[in-house]
Image (cartoon, rainbow, N blue to C red; front, side):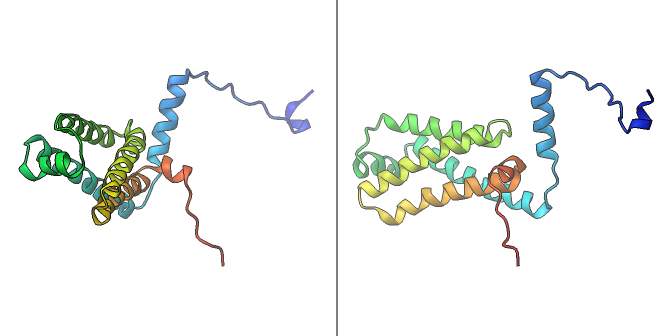
Length: 162
């Protein structure tokens, strides 16, 4: 029987891909979905602000700046030995956030870290300074949302239809 006469078509065989190859292809195509240039630049600007804040915080703590040590030890009640761990955590978060492969995981970890910072400020009734880690968290997710199409697909903000 003639396949064309019955309306059936013969599909070309699909190549068999390993899970690694499929993941590489899906990741590559997810990142190549075109976004307006302003979104990418704004996303990187937001991300730069997050990285700058974390690195400046780590720098002041790592150099044992007098105000930074006093703030942590006397103001928040943490032991002085916690300073090294805080610096390591902030630097590790910066590296993870800047690498595209780990940026989503870094944003999740950063949310937890900054949530702890907000809680620490609120615990000592420092409500004005509690806004800083809150804004940094919003900028981190906003920057990631604007520069990574996978996040935009996960959380699609839509305009209302008129």
